[in-house]
Image (tube, rainbow over all chains, first blue to last red; front, side, top):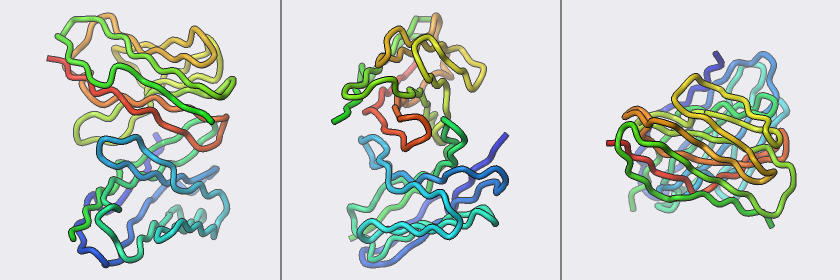
Length: 110
Length: 111
């Protein structure tokens, strides 16, 4: 059974703080790593897809890196804002399927 | 542009009653379709996925079934609900191994 792990489980930060969280996955037979943001009362929204070792993606204040050899990805948020409060999910792409981690729940206080 | 619809948004059902959740996609042809469940305090678990009409793969043994009677319609069913079927159900679509796009979800409470 493939295991995708995320840490920490939850995070509380002050507005303006920068933060990062980790997604760990089995490094063998890697295909793709996805990041999603899931806000309360909304659908999960795709942030990034990364496929190559060393990939870095950026969208505004959010960026992500990928290390397929050691099996981890980092998501960074620079200068967190209250609207960044959400659960951040990573998912390992295996063929047509995604195997999701349990998510990191981020709460940003004004 | 593509849109995905799910209904109902919320549902409260007694134990032992049947279930039918529907998902439809517009603006694309022959998508992959997926059903996920998030149980309380847990992550997103893939229940079923489909690469075409009447082609369904089940990921976990359970009390649920899925059907795809039309290209852009995906239905999740149960003949008799259990308490453990409570959760948040999400439908998603993708073009093969690409990004998945999620519907608004259905919150099911089984009492």
